[in-house]
Image 1 (cartoon, helix red, strand yellow):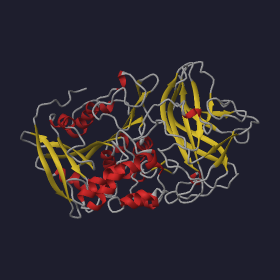
Image 2 (cartoon, rainbow, N blue to C red; image 1 turned 135 degrees about the vertical axis):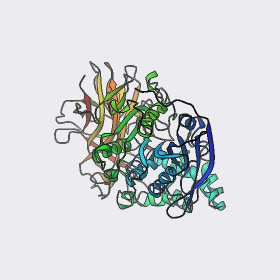
Image 3 (cartoon, rainbow, N blue to C red; image 1 turned 45 degrees about the horizontal axis):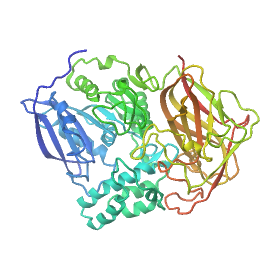
Image 4 (cartoon, rainbow, N blue to C red; image 1 turned 120 degrees about the vertical axis):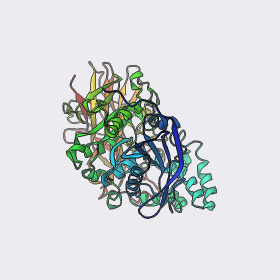
Amino acid sequence: MSELSHPQYRVRVEKDVPSKTRDGVTLRADVYRPEAEGRFPVILSRLPYNKNLRTRPGDIDYFVERGYVVIMQDVRGRFGSDGDEYYPLIWEGRDGYDAVEWAAALPWSNGKVGTMGQSYLGITQHLLAPLRPPHLVTCFPVSCPGDFHENFAYHTGGVLELGWRVPNIVFMARDTAERLGHVNLIEPIERQLADVKNVLARPFTDTAYRRLPLMHWAEALRPIARYLTDYLQHPEDGPYWWSMNVTREAHNVNVPMYHVTSWYDFVQWGTLKQYAAVRDHAMTPHARANQRLLIGPWAHIFPYTVPTSRGTGDIDFGPDAKVELHEIQLRWFDYWLKGIATGILEEAPVKIFVMGENRWRDENEWPLARTRYTPYYFHSRGTANSARGDGTLSPAMPADETPDRFTYDPDNPVPTCGGSTLIISTGVQDQREVEARDDVLVYTSDPLPAPLELTGPIIVKLFAATSAPDTDFTAKLVDVRPDGYAQNLADGIIRGRYRESNFRPSPLTPGAVYEFTIDLWAISHVFFAGHRLRLDISSSNFPRFDRNLNTGEDQATGTRWEQARQTIFHDARYPSHVILPIIPR
């Protein structure tokens, strides 16, 4: 590997540098550039969180000292940039295109532009890439989806991402109210924020999360966040969401991209889907051949420069989990923007962190071609309720077995306990308290005689009936250690009305048996000998997801709920099971 760019420049800052969008709106950016004569490649980031606060100076200086111009631009309607309102997603493609071309023409630019950033700063990259600005050379999106119905406002399975989506909007609303002069709204927003000490450290109170109807939040914030009303009025996928779904536009991408996500990232599904879509369908062979993917063991909010071995709930993933993203980014940008032979393209296209063994491994594709998708079936004598019950999990097909039953009460939902979340409790948590509930069915394997690696997507095929015209079913994969600790690995949910289609809902017939497919997303994890596989089944995961009220009415405007009597079948006719991605060892 050739020597990377090394620090040699002092940093000069130009504050609030204006640019015009095609429709005449002024956007402002802070430009960080080497204090030297000459022209340099540009790294652009666009964000709604305040260009002065979102990124630490050290994150910027690292690249400027090594010969890059770094531009941090407030998006339309936020902080230093003009605009009548802030509406996520819809302007970012066009505004991003204009920003790239503006940046390329700056007197300090050599005309080559790359993009960089995490979360919404990655979303802005996905949205502009299919528009193909002529001076865009490459992108480095971290922790961001491209399908904003399935993995942003809603979750795969058609359920509202309540736990982070509403607090995030309320948190951002005060800035917007002040900026747009809606002073009459500031006091009500302050009252809502009284439910939150720190939106990145503590969620709403339980009372706030339980507030019905959900449309209450939209009505309170409509003058400054009308997009929440639109989100709640469009629970199904369809034209509203397709207009900003860049996964559907992957065939228009023509640049190399380095995608980063993590096993406990709440947008993991969307990142993996976007990577695969661009890898398989990008406009040019050049773009298809130069997509890269890295999947770590972290959650969504990790220290941007150095993801640590901790920060994902209870677990310590060991020293190898610490990754210097700046070095990877520098190797990527040095190659594409400076032509330095860094060797990054000679490496395997996929890097994954295998949990349990806690080590990185190079792979040639995702999912892995050598995967053996293996069903593990539910078994019980009819009382799998809680970890004290008789539920088991094994590769053996069920015969004639008594179904399991539980009651789902929206007034007493199963609490969220870690997982791929944001704002609320994140990452690895001990599931034993949740598994003590009678409305959680628990199916556990015998202790494993040898290590077992699962790497890839996980799907549950659930045969179930309900007394309600609509309800939810949840599933969670757990590693039970010999000391009893129950580590959550992956989970998912399906809303009954979306069992066949996420854009054509259909009601359930009470008492009828249906097959529900629950997507648990993906993991890479080794179960050691003596550990046990476990699958938990229930009907709620609150407040991560909004509660199904079981009435079949509109979820956004509903205020009444009913209990639902759930029946889970596992017999020769209805063999409920989980499909595990087993990797031969």
